[in-house]
Amino acid sequence: MLKLEFKPYILQKKYVFRIAGGARTSTPLVLTKLSYDGVEGFGEASMPPLYGESIETTIQFISKIDLSAFTNPYETESILEYVDQIAPGNQAAKAAFDIALHDLICKLLGIPLHHYFGLPAKNLVTSKTIGIDTPEVMAQRVQEASDFQYLKIKLGTDNDRELVEAIKLVSDQPLYVDANQGWKDKEIALDFIHWLKEQGVVFIEQPLPKANKADLAWLTARSPLPIIGDEGIQRLTDLKDAASLYHGINIKLMKSTGLREAFKMANTAKALGLKIMLGCMSETSCAIAAAAHLGALADWIDLDGNLMITNDPYHGHQVQNGKIMLNRFTGIGLLNPQWNQIPDYVEKI
Ligand code: MG
Image 1 (tube, helix red, strand yellow):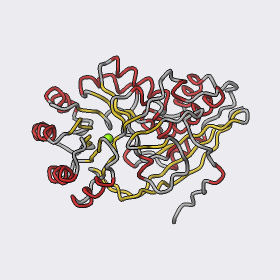
Image 2 (cartoon, rainbow, N blue to C red; image 1 turned 135 degrees about the horizontal axis):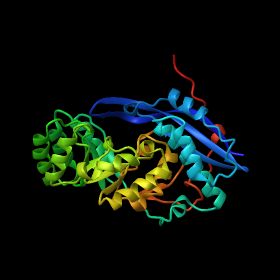
Image 3 (cartoon, rainbow, N blue to C red; image 1 turned 30 degrees about the vertical axis):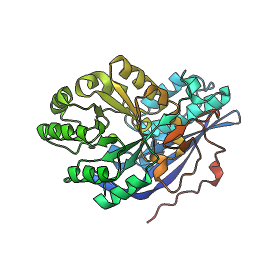
């Protein structure tokens, strides 16, 4: 019989994290464990405020999951279809279940997750994100990230050009730019993208608000750099008009409802001629380890969420010289997870 347990957790960030639209020092999570026949699978929901989920909504959702009708854990399509229809939204909560289920069945099968999806164990060159700060602090963070081949910077501020110039003074690493919907005018954005191309930028993530579809289509038709949809692309159904709005999409488990739909999205995106970026939220090594197994499907990897936190309860794949070295453990690749030692989160009043 399948048994699901969960535990709220607050992930603490190494540095205050600022992006266009807010700043924060922690991220609420719900960790999950799914057991069957003495074997345990682990999962996680990460809930940055932008997407509207919280520890409360996630626990509410997970508490509604009744697995008594399912005697065979390998019937993932039916099990996940059932979980998906319990309530709309709740993508991170659904991912917490999906990741634990895939970890569990791969352990039962005795294979690493990438083999389950028919993929090779590819070591992944990941970018390292530098949050918005003063030019001096950003330059310092860039120096700390000298191992990484690519840096990702968050723009969408009033002094974007100054921030890029401060980074270029201390680094030659090519940059991924994420504007987090922070630019409003398509013509100004296009001019700025031409300038960014000269600064060694590789692509632009979500330059304009996701609702401004006509402007996004206009910009994508003209941009000298690939335009990647992140906030605008969450689940498989969002790919219907994606090819007219973006050159590529950023797939994240916390948006896609987990691995199963992320895999379907990657294949659909390929069929539509879209580039694929694999990204993350602030996550423990659990969700990062899981996502890394899909890395062979992606053109660009941005899986560094677990490198920017101080209280990671898990150990997953090692990162060496800016590369995620996919381990060969069964399941998602956690090393000896200690569920009972993860402290219970007590809400501060
Ligand atoms: Mg983004």
